[in-house]
Length: 424
Image (cartoon, rainbow, N blue to C red):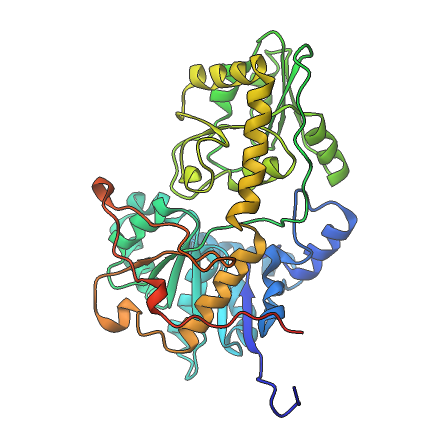
């Protein structure tokens, strides 16, 4: 292809929270202090550069104490980090499309657009995580303010069909989309059969607000034949100290974390009710490491993994959690089948960080090409649009509304799909 025939790349700006600067992320990734299975650059958004995009990340400004205090004060007042967005306004306004990772970023961009009213505004793909969990608790003035800002988004994206369905009800006229989150797929450790005679090593990871450490401790604390390792900053150590079979640690390097993972027999993900697939990253990492998984059935996680791959238990039930762990302890063959099926499902579903990024690529093409299916433009009822499997082009999921009815969907097959040929 000649230089004259080469199409200019689409400029995508990834606006992340302060502290997720691509340079510092890559430094931590290289020295092993960025824990877990991670991409070289934040969340792998840079992979879009293989598909005709030029990707830039938001930058963290080195702050004085006064500047930091000011940014925190504004964040406390508004509920999101407007100062960080304002500092990155040149990159934001110079882009064709902006991708955000949580509501803290897209609410800030909504306010930025309201204030600056740029003549040429980039398209905004606004990813939500927690906002629908908290929406019913907001006072009416806050809901009005946030709804006003959300109106600046061209599409709202969600990781779970649960918060997607809630958003369709809350934001009539707003385009809403399910975009499933995936992690780097290159890491795989083959599942192995546990020796039935040794003490069962149970692992639990995470710092998220919906981790139910109380349930886990009540379920497994003091049990013979079971040792529990919790890697978290949010667990109450004073409660843990009552039990000799539970320890808390905070790995500071991936070498430490990998040792814990490879020494474990079962991953337990105890969760309270939520709408946003809390615990998803840990579940995917456990499957990648070949561990059988016991997980609370909340947040839409069962839309990512079928029941033949994970032992799902009711939330807030120590008895059910204990029974599930004891079941795996008594049946090593069942544990091996579950771990094998969960890992196979990761591959068969095509769910990984690349599929996640390709959904952003497709959405960006839709928006920049003037997708006629945008409900806000058509004045129709909001639609929840199923994501597509990048391998097979088929819908991955359908969100359900009240009473199990399917939410209104745009048929992805009816829309022209952008070619996603990788650049040579």
